[in-house]
Length: 331
Ligand code: SF4
Image 1 (cartoon, rainbow, N blue to C red):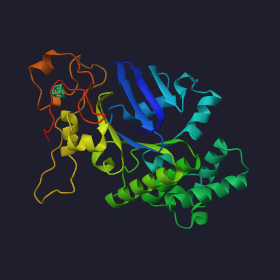
Image 2 (tube, rainbow, N blue to C red):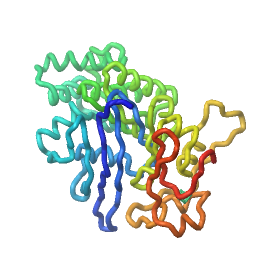
Image 3 (cartoon, rainbow, N blue to C red):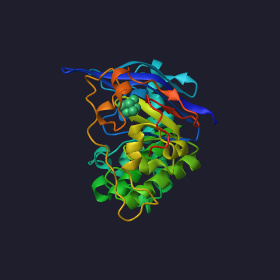
Image 4 (cartoon, rainbow, N blue to C red):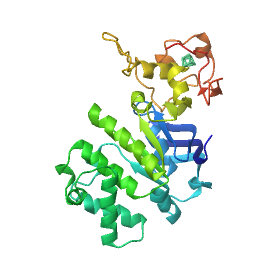
């Protein structure tokens, strides 16, 4: 086992809307070691992004509210810091930096790449404008952008989608943070560029000795690059384990469904991808029983009559699952 960098314990975040309490994050726990890459995987709306934003108190309040939990970063519970405190500002940069999805909207269209990079660098580092510019050029070089000096003068619309995503990664790299959170880092990119972005992120972790959380709906994207995976559904972690354990011996029907819905390397011509039927539940009126029940092909009387299944350890390495049944090997 490595040395822990981040440990999230029993994090709870809700949004209080006219329709009722939306339990977006409901008792989520996970950890990341130093220089480790993990993934948090789940469908859109499962609470994975809210989990990450809650860690650094970037939840709009109201309607959002962090109701409980602990977030330990390098030995300090950063959830004790006020959202606007200088300590939390320091965490959002030197501690944890974010690569947001949709590079076109995450970058400001009216400022050049250089302006945006130097602004972030000067926010987190005491340095002159000229030094920040040079660090910005270096950050572009770190993410393999050709002609970095020239790219500093470009506006986002002058760059391709893949290049814009590299700029966002460069902004995160320039902060020299201990942990990078990449939220859907390859959305809207074609498959070849997706693979390049993932290789680039892995290279950055190795070179900069940082840690990385990849937040994605695409389980197939992360299996090559991560050491451990957490699967989220309806605001909770429903299965977690080492990547090898999880993809070779998935236990939760939802994880099995995710694996069956992504193409495999050994796929034969004519093999069908099987989507997961149905839609995720509304997080406003969650049942007391298993939240996956209406979509689950294995649901039985026990599932219908028992309360929500707690996460339990299996005999697999670091393998936990929240399911009443023992479904090992049912891929
Ligand atoms: Fe399916 Fe039952 Fe397991 Fe829920 S507890 S995932 S309904 S088998």
